[in-house]
Amino acid sequence: MNNSDSDSPVVALVPAAGRGVRLGENMPKAFVAVGGTPMVRLAVDGLLASGAVDRIIVMVPVELVESAVALLPPSDAVRVVVGGAERTDSVRAGIAAAPDAGYYLVHDAARALTPPALIARVAAELRAGRRAVVPALPVVDTVKTVDQDGVVTGTPNRAALRAIQTPQGFAADLLRAAYETNVLATDDAGLVERLGAEVHTIPGDPMAFKITTPLDLMLAETVCNAARSV
Ligand code: C5P
Image 1 (spheres, helix red, strand yellow):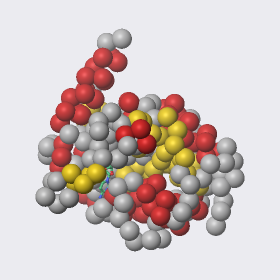
Image 2 (spheres, helix red, strand yellow; image 1 turned 90 degrees about the vertical axis):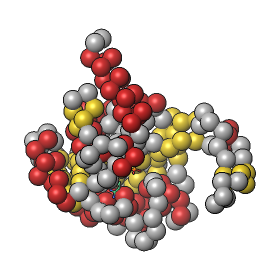
Image 3 (cartoon, protein in one colour; image 1 turned 90 degrees about the horizontal axis):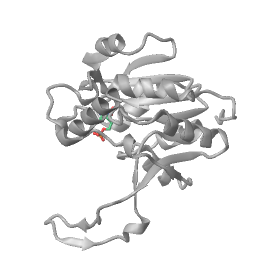
Image 4 (cartoon, protein in one colour; image 1 turned 60 degrees about the horizontal axis):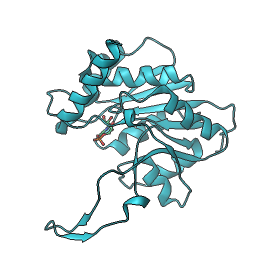
């Protein structure tokens, strides 16, 4: 069903069910605190602050549902559901929990410091008629493809490459169709592209970086402390 008209609800889906082993903390990544606040709470606060989101579904590991409810803002607009083994399973669970959405914004809990203005820009593009919108930044490193022995097989033209962030925004019917396939992907736009749909980029924001490694966590802590001392 295509229920995406400009008044229909924008539902944010927040995958927060990853184990986060690369971060090296002893709890799932989304529950690790940045500047004293768990990432998942920061991500939800950013979505609420954008003023562009009607409801938020947060997908967490099964054993952390109660903790997530306790640490998220007590609001009818925020709901916690159980995620899955892979990120795609978690997003699929979120879609199922909000079948009446007109638009979905899929936003990683790990992008905890994303500026609300970026979230609002993605939603505005959807309401203006775009069916798939992702924030993108130019790539600073040269990127190479390698074979299984680590031998370089190619060097794509850097000018044509972009690093893609979240929130990724979709007309609800398009994202649902993309998730009817059982393919795994590292982002949602990748599934939508397989359907042959056009995915539009808008300028991303460095502050929407994904907190993945201990160095990312140090950066995020530093940014939070600097913001507090202003
Ligand atoms: O692993 P990666 O950094 O790509 O995870 C991106 C986001 O997807 C994180 O917020 C993580 O919690 C979430 N995720 C999930 N369910 C999984 C794996 C990852 O919700 N099974």
